[in-house]
Amino acid sequence: MRAVVQRVTEASVRVGDEVTGQIELGLMVLLGVAADDMDADAKYLAKKIVGLRIFEGPDGKMNLSLSEVGGKLLAVSQFTLLGDCRKGRRPNFMAAAKPEEAERLYQHFIGTTRGLGVEVACGRFRAHMDVSLVNDGPVAILLDSAKQF
Image (cartoon, rainbow, N blue to C red; front, side, top):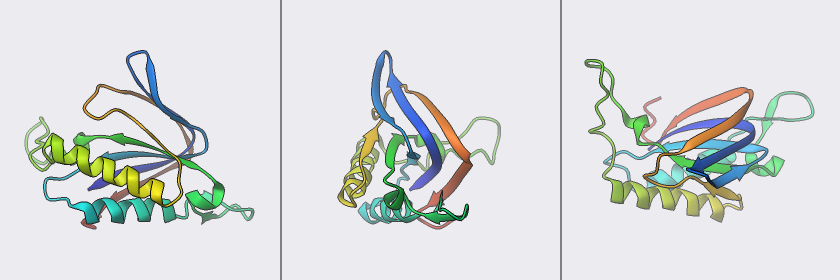
């Protein structure tokens, strides 16, 4: 499972004319599910993301986590994070999970994050979404449950 975690002052996702998720201070998470991911991968990333110390404390250093600043999380599924562009010019998405399993694990990630006391807003799985955000810093972190990077 892969995630792009961005520290934001605001973020939202729309499907057509409907805002499906919106947050102010917090983290915008683009989440891609791999074919071999399991519940443990979703749980690992949820705990890792909630605990990341990427918010500035009074000393101006990144010492505070999402929970410590009272931030929210906007989760957006994004299978394209599993795109392999090493050959040719068109990404290969063979490493991405089948939609049914990807949605289940995406929902497991959301449920685990909520279970950790974080308010979570969401995009809509398998929908064309328009995502807007104001990246604070900018700060963007790449995570992979298989610890490939």
